[in-house]
Image (cartoon, rainbow, N blue to C red):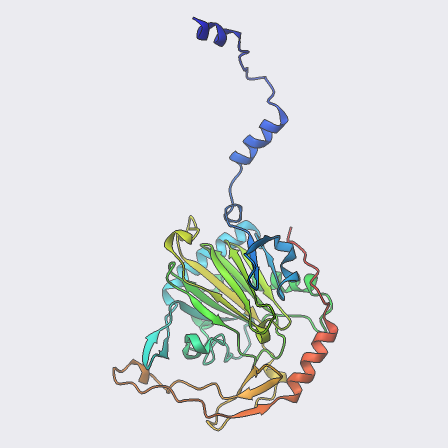
Length: 366
């Protein structure tokens, strides 16, 4: 009886009754469409022996020469690009690489795209891959833009233009505009696919390059780790669908980046592609203005940072043709040991450093 009387005393809500403002807000948050960035975690930074700590996205540049932004492209554009990439995914390939004295396949699929319709194929999309010599992309096939659909190329070039505009906003002091000429795509099929810690070759990019990574599909961690900093710094960035990371300054000289393998439960799946993650890294080739010497292998040398300066080095090369497909395939040719200083790269790095702002002026996309 008491329960019945208590229920009778409670005011009944009517269709015209207004809810308290705070309750209305809570209901709106529940009903609004969710984005993958709503569920991804925070950027974390670990300095030396300290425990990792969370930091705001906009403060990343205080710890590493990089910036991070979520929900970069308009939602419809990002979804359309992901659909086009996924439809093209069957043509992406794992590539052979030589490790532990045997040929293996890279733990991901790759494909290269030119952003300029009239540009010649780039060695970054071809023999040199994305500079991951320790991880097999050195054996990637030639630029594959020719077999990509016109819709996919148009979507990639549209994204490239938006990225160029964003870089101009956050790096306003650059001596020349950053205009991407190529994009290397990596396809991570599941939590076991990965790319180990590496920095990109500089032979076509030049010193202090800007490289922008666009993540689409499942969320995976992107890790930046300093090589020479004291104390060492590690930054872990959860990159959900439609997020970007911009690397600049000495990020390729003094930092490594990676997408490490993880547990299956650590992958934030996407509604369209499940655990699959697509990564597109946009770069600007400066091949036309860089004079590359040849090493003793009679191949173009690679530009690398060697702790105290820039040097042209032999990167080693895969055997020609499809020799690596034979069971008795010989190992790739070892580097010839060629090494020469690059006064041009040293002077160019100093020029770029003087023109760039010390810190990024981070502008979040609207």
